Length: 421
Ligand code: BGC
Image (cartoon, rainbow, N blue to C red; front, side, top):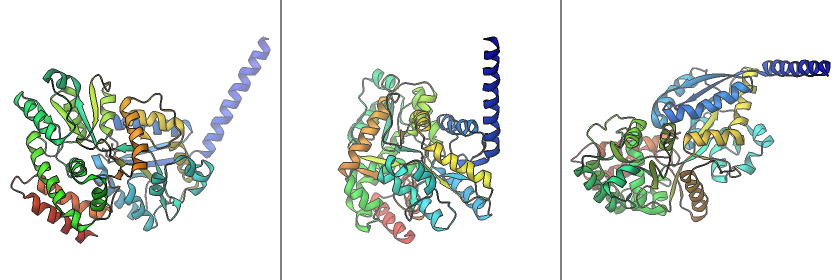
């Protein structure tokens, strides 16, 4: 008996070491560029690093701080142009197409086929991930952008209801202000200004005109009356943020809501990742609600990794393993629990997810049928990076100029878009 046990242990050790040896033989390095540096984001990306290391690969972290990813994209350009791109880079819809068109990305069809990506991904997401019908990127999650986050005890103490329209927002905001609480936590950076503006514009335009403006770039809708209304409301909202907002990072704004210094934030559900990292529970500590007046719409923001052509064979193998891991059920669950987003696979067990995620999933499915599933302009899903940049300029300049005129702003928006098309 003793002998048998010993043999079994030896055999066990042997197979473990031969496994380690075979892993080592196939081991490569993956260098991954991303902008996930806040508390919740860092916890989320650590999941991917751990999984890759468990498979025997080396993870080379290439983090470039800056919400929305503008700085990361600038750094990526320098690296790629010098002929030394990372294996994978976090990227958004239209950017993927732009990089693929330039011939930088690698073909992932073999991994996609072996793992049935066409079968497990919603069509709208599969389309984003492909260039001319071939997979060149891997989607990680689906973020809903049109959310409002509120500190529950602030609302309870003030005897207020979380606003579901802009009129209600202004009433609630007046009371909060009078009581010394900042109504809206906001970070004055172009992408955050655009995130807030997009939520307001969606309420004013409705789904059909939102698409005409931000996807089709229709001049008459961009400069039209509803857009003027959006700028008017946007201007009014400026009275409900604090004077320290310029330059503030989005996660600092979220922490103001967590601490109760501010009552609300309008931000995508990566904000939930910050609440989760601070051990806060939805429904008890905070409330997630659709951005005012947008309960039946869903502005989506899919994070993807674009895969670059790299030379080293072992690293190519590691790169394919990374692609496979990202869409595995295990990764999709743990990552999205931390990140605040919902899994990009539709065949997931959602029992560990909270009510905000379940609401988001239900809305994602419903809006994909109703026509109210809309690509986020602020997060690079609706149009090219050039047009997006032109829109950011007009939106941010308007927001920071107290004398700016809403009617002129809408005309400028149309003009700037035309010039960037
Ligand atoms: C990305 C999120 C990220 C957020 C803030 C968004 O553009 O899609 O994944 O958490 O920026 O950094």
